[in-house]
Length: 168
Image (cartoon, rainbow, N blue to C red; front, side, top):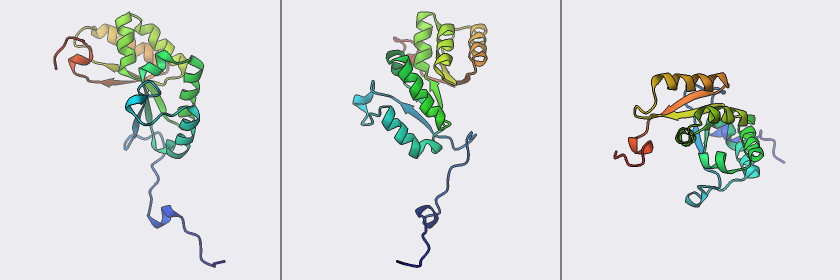
């Protein structure tokens, strides 16, 4: 047995822990593609693997974009458990712009905002609509999201992200 003091790896390499959440700078945003986009990704995490991953990496992650295919195509109970896992690690899950786009095309944006909030999403991503939505309507949707406890983020995309026949 040695009399030397045990030294941690983080002490040896002067490893800095991330600042406490919520952070206003040096944020890490990730995308959870789930099983739906998995053929293009090597990561295929179920809830057990996600829980293990977050135990290790959760303190570094601030936001997670959950792919719309998961929101629309998986059991609600499973999705709520996934959202709760992220929230347990103070990670804000958000609905991506594809969710908004599908809701807009179906004429159900108000209902989609309410349904997303009911699932536990704390943030919703809107996108530019190239003049197809009036400022008055935008204001109503933003207020509805805020009234349901959601923060709003906005992604500026090329017109082809909004219109199928548009050129970039």
